[in-house]
Image (cartoon, rainbow, N blue to C red; front, side, top):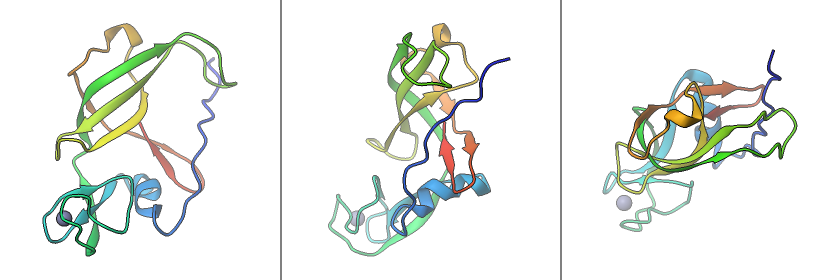
Length: 131
Ligand code: ZN
């Protein structure tokens, strides 16, 4: 039986808790500008599109496409049995709204650029990692 992956949850702060803890309730959440509706990620105090300062937390669909990826074949970290996929995905809600993540529940040789993917979460004690 495979070892349980040991992904490390980043430090959860008031500024990023919506992102790292939304998955505990099954939601992928980003900051969104109330003035121009742009999503802001990584979390910042100001909208990068219009410099608006009124941001709210908003859940997205969790649907994305693979923008690029690499298949790792080296055993760099204990608990991460190769091969595994590290990818950049772009959320369907906005061009440029991207996450770097692992692709799971899919054989590495089946991954293609442009393929549709959907978020799932690795739940931990203090948050949840979007995969
Ligand atoms: Zn804005």
